[in-house]
Length: 120
Image (tube, rainbow, N blue to C red; front, side, top):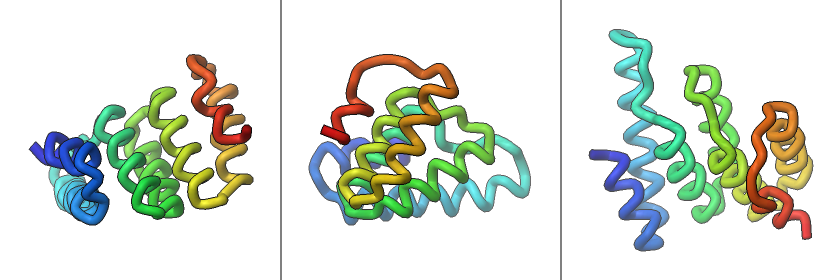
């Protein structure tokens, strides 16, 4: 349910609401971690959350979320990485964006040129 609300907020450009939903999901995950190891975030929800942080001018929070999800065994896909790169670029965090782009290559994630477009 929260993922659907998050997507609706992002699609409606309601960034404050989207960021509140991300915060709620993160708090729920923190509480649930005590009883079970699974996360509410999958790669699709993570990508939407990263987009919300990027569009909400919160690139540091996007990076924090990405690191947390990786630690919790949510495997980011190409879309997640490209969305995080975009969030970094919007926040002028160029070294972080470049590091993520290099990580994509090391992980063997390949696809469109979307990750490179932020550098042009």
